[in-house]
Length: 270
Image 1 (cartoon, one colour):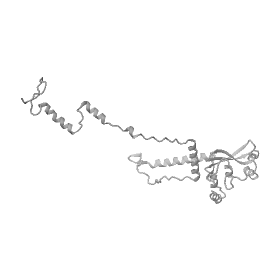
Image 2 (cartoon, one colour):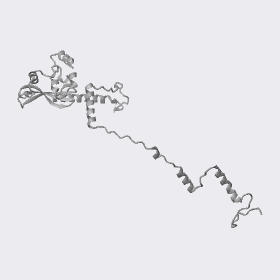
Image 3 (cartoon, one colour):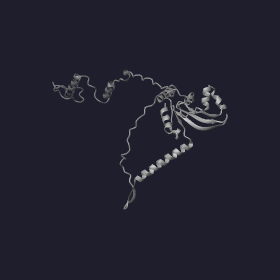
Image 4 (cartoon, helix red, strand yellow):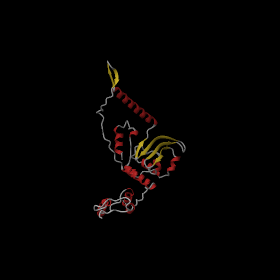
């Protein structure tokens, strides 16, 4: 709980109370179970500096009455204005004059279990204007630092390429999420997984080895037999073929050549 810091700020200078826009409050015991049905009870904790114990909500709670009774009462009350589960709740402080007439006084928002007071329009505009003037002044000062002047050259701009050594090169460090954030993220991821279950692809069937095995040898033999000599069967046939060619040309054993039209091979012996 953020009680010690609030008490120190209020007792340091009683004549000047702290700005409520700079105060936050939370109770760690409620964060994990906080929802739209119990956020008003969480806000009405007595240690909450934003809660006024003189309101009608406190009267109804002490007397254990129906909350609808507050519509017929007059005075200060708190209502739940907006709900955005599981992270944001807006509570309004208002003064009820009658059943149909109320005057809003302040709005509070509960973000991740931490209560803040929402700024009014005047404070928001002043903050934006102050921020704009501050950054414009910084831009003018930086622009003025780049201007140079010399009597012979006049004015010119000098934008040095050297980096400013005063700039800190702090590495970005990832902050660890709180227990509340981790539980809420797990809840959302589980809900998405239930709504959109992942599609499981069927395993691919293996291709049989006999279907892809081919025998290219017969095709090569057939291609060779079309445009070239017949394949050699063994070593004996090769040598026989080589020896047969000269015998046919010379007649063999010194016999005479083959005469055309002779009907055969003439032998050399008489």
